[in-house]
Length: 197
Image 1 (tube, rainbow, N blue to C red):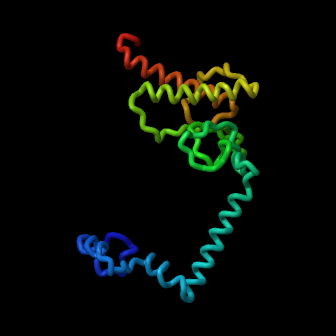
Image 2 (cartoon, helix red, strand yellow; image 1 turned 135 degrees about the horizontal axis):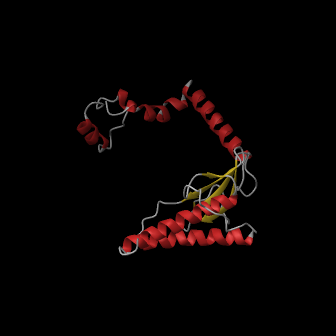
Image 3 (tube, rainbow, N blue to C red; image 1 turned 90 degrees about the horizontal axis):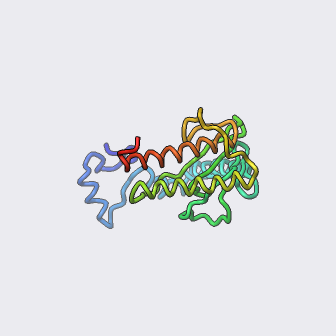
C-alpha cells in the first residue's frame, strides 16, 4: 500500500493503475480524505467532528495571536530586536516583524534571557563573492543598528562559536555575527589567493 489514505482504493497496491485512473475524468478517488471532506462532513457525526476541529483550530489561532503586540514584533515568549526584511517578502506589513520573511533577525528569548541570530540562507548565488556581499550587507545593516542605538560594537569575540547560537547580550550576538562574517569572507579570500595562508 502506497499511502494510509489509499486503504479503501482498489488501486492501493497498483501504482500504474492508480496513475491511469487519476487521468480518467469519471474516476473519483476514494481516499479517506476525499471521503471525509467530500461526504462525511455533511452528515452526522462527521459534521460534528469537523465543527469541533474548527473550534480547536480557531482557539489555537486566537491564542497564538492574542500574545502578539500591535505591530507583531513581540509575543509572550520572544521579542524581535532587529531585522532586515527580505526583498522577496510578500506580506503586506510596513516593517519587519515576527511574521515577515527576514534576511537577518535578532530575537530575544524572554524565558531564557538570551539573544539569537537567524540568517536566511535559501538564496542561490552565482559565486562566492555574491555570498560574501550578501553577508557584508547584512553585517553593515546590523552595525548601523548597533551604532544608532548606542550599543558597543567593539566586544571581543574570542570565545564566540560563530553566526548562530544563544548569547547573553546583544553585544555578544553582534560580536559573534561579526566574527562569522569576517571569518567567512576571509576564508573565501584565502581560498581564491592560494599564496595567502
